[in-house]
Amino acid sequence: MRIWGITDTGMVRKENQDAYAIQDIAGYTVAIVCDGMGGTSGGRLASTIAVDTYREELTGNLKEGMSPDQLEQVSRFAVSLANTAIREEAARTPGYERMGTTLVSAIALDDRALISNVGDSRAYLIDREGLRQISRDHSVVENMVERGDLTPLAARHHPSRNLITRALGPDPKVETDTFPITWKQGDFILLCSDGLVNTVTDQEILFEVIHGGAPDGCLERLLALAKQRGAPDNVTVVLLMNI
Image (cartoon, rainbow, N blue to C red; front, side, top):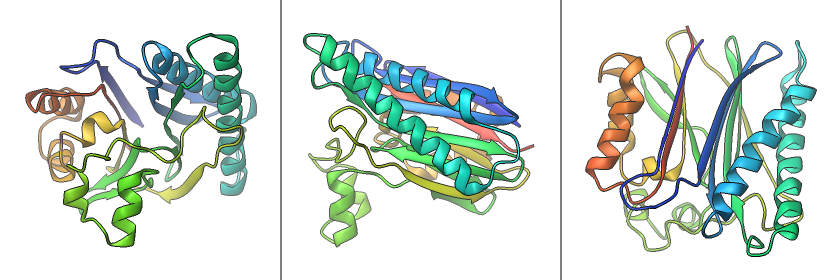
């Protein structure tokens, strides 16, 4: 497996409140992307805590030969502990009471992977046949799209597109969505914060991953495209390739 990651403050924000990590744990390839929120420094702290706690818990609990159900349990438990860690830090630190973060992760081994997500950071499966979003956005506009009140195209420009309905930090308990998938040699899994998808379309992501050139430069090309569009938010992308 090959894997790449990139993060950037963007063209408008003064601080990068995204965080990501890539790590091999017990034979699994683990990737995490978090997009923090909560004002100056609070979002950065929340996303960092989430990444570090999630990764540490997987390090202690991932074992070889786990079933899909066991992987889901381990991931959900790690997200829950990350949520608790953020809340405990927020309670100790004045001014950080409202901090929180999204989380999207992939735990991959051979031809299978587990995607977990809370919030609107996304996971895509990309192959020669196209691009498919695996994760589900926990957001106001996604709920409107599902009800038929808004088209996906209109959702990209809706004034409430940045309002999320689920995150780590705000509530004592957090619900995690998990998606077990299979992927084959030559396929890609892409994780990203909304700073990418709010400026670059799914079709453009697909083109850059499959047809844009060598995979080694794919994330730099996507970041450059986001910056050409003004990159009003932080941009973070992780790309896994099954070889």
